[in-house]
Length: 202
Length: 167
Image (cartoon, rainbow over the protein chains, first blue to last red):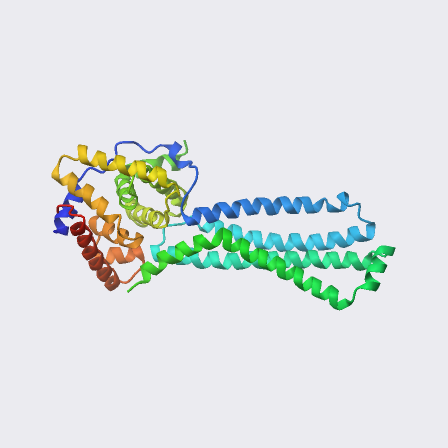
């Protein structure tokens, strides 16, 4: 088999380029690279998180919180919004840069692979932080509410039980986050790793 | 239409043969080839702001097109794949009367058995790129590009022999 001959035939052959590419083709539907799927997923999650923050803003009105609890809620809500803004900015920067595919293949794949891994860790951290803040707020409500029912509950349960409960709750949230991240992003990361490995094979 | 878009369309139409070849190289049936073609066009447009004009448009296009193809995965719809693959074989059997075209058609069939990186190596080699250019495009050393390309050529020869593609 003569590769040089094939090369000549390849370069002199018909490239099936009869149809003109139009502006219509620049707006496209469903993208199919793992990077696009990750981008799409990130976009969805961003929308859901914004929606959650908006819903959370109405919690004091919906549950008719007392003025004391209302102020406490605002403090916790402010912290959650601050953390979310910080992380959203980081995700957005990554999202924007991910459109540049003009680096060489290796740099491009490595950049995306490690940035994605880093962003997944940031995503997990954000979930832990938000869960922790929510739990802290629940604990504050628990201790600030001085009605009879709360007093009875506090008399009957030990502090160890409360601490254990908080620990288990954080653990469950952690496991859900871990599963969520693996389910949505894990398979795409795996595909990227397979391509990187085939590039690195000696 | 915006001026940038006009310039982009002009440049991309002048070089669209590259995208057609990459799509045929990476996908084995017409439907997937069309999808990949569309995907490359879209990625090129989205990455266009990063094109500073320091290199030739075609050089930049090779990179983006190959990076897109390397990362492109088919739709999980086996039924569609099967039908269109048969269609493509029929087209190849009836229309490719010239020996040259037939050889290229068999080459496209044979490369389907290569992995994403091996396809990129063979593609860049066929596009007359030197070992140095191949290495630069893939981000590997020149020696590694040479070794990998030789191995891929051997593998391709074996595939062609195994399938009696008549080279």
